[in-house]
Image (cartoon, rainbow, N blue to C red):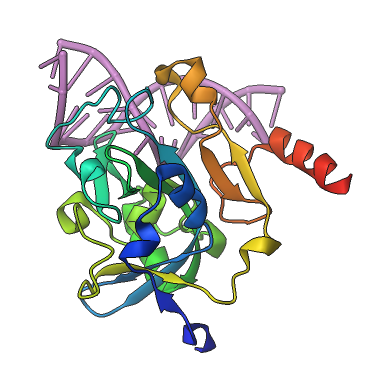
Amino acid sequence: MSSKINSRRLIKEDFNKSCGDLSLYLLGKILVRKLEDGTLLKGRIVETESYLGGEDRGSHSYNGRRTTANEPMYMSAGTCYIYMTYGMYYCFNISSSEPGAAVLLRALEPLCGLETMERMRDEKMKKGRRILKFSKLCDGPSKLCIAMNITKDNLNKADLTDPQNNTIWLEDDPKFDSKKITVVHTSRIGIASAGKLWASRPLRFYILNNDSVSRRDKKVEKELELFIND
DNA sequence: ATGCGGATCGCCT
DNA sequence: GGCGATCCGCATT
């Protein structure tokens, strides 16, 4: 309804940022997905992770590794990099201006098409229909791919900066004030095998007090709270 | 709230 | 041949 007013589609220059800058910039932006039947799905990005090139042992592009699979990480800023993980799930990344460095989208706050998202999630469940809280429909990197029907076949290498692309794009929400949120900086999830140094680096970012975040770091949140109250 | 085991397969060594 | 940038279901605290 009124949420459409003044929303602006992100363009090439918006994505042309370093991996770290893009990870923070994307918080609060709206991921829009148009399905083949015309259904419009929207979710606010509330959690991201940086995957750097070169030294980053947690990254698929570690040590300059470049294969057909991770090629999108080296493509122009705003390219979709989608890979399958654990044989059954997908993860969705957006490439940055730095070759080999991309941003993993870890969680969305569902805004539009919640019934469709719920159905997509339910279909993937083993047992029958479960009641999921709406805020939890996209609270994980693979959950958001299921809810929005994002697969490698679908959208790998899709260009988010292409104005003609009407299957997936990003929008700015003018009512979202980045100055009114607090961003939690903490460690990335699921990369223990990368070693302590890289597993502990604060390369995960999420909006404090948002219900759709995948995993909170209460320790860091507490420290932030003390800092804010000073 | 927290933790563990199983599912499942494309990609790289 | 082996390994995940995960999720789900069930068990235990």
